[in-house]
Length: 187
Image 1 (cartoon, rainbow, N blue to C red):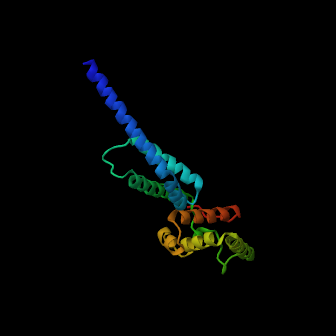
Image 2: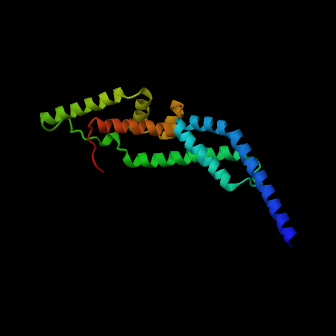
Image 3: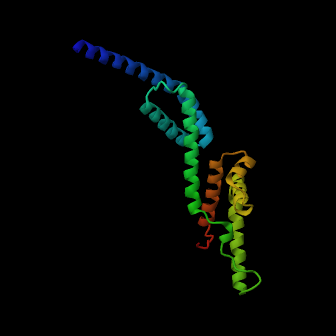
């Protein structure tokens, strides 16, 4: 009986060593390509680094399961899903903070005090100046989203960038407007 137990331990240790070596080989082979892919998708080396580490951690926890035929394909599919999940979370956060351009408090030009007309013109001037100072891509994404009511996916296709990048551009424009003192109506 003791010989059988030792034999089983030996087989277990050998299979663990083989599985561990397979995982090390996978990590060495996928590290560069995954980083490059995720850097392109996220446009941030730091974010790509975090995602690569998360992918490798998940793969390591799963072990070298025999039912996964191609760990490379599986890792890239996992990377795509993680980028999508991250983009959804970013979009949700951004939408909670976003304020439609139509909600900017401007008085009606045809009625009211002349001072309110002047204030409205000044506010429009601040909005125009703030938008003019933005990077062209940020301004374009903001205008398409807020003024032309295009969905993020359509803007991304039109501008040739990722949906996540569109979300970042719109968020940056909203932040710039808030920092410039543009007042928003509360919902």
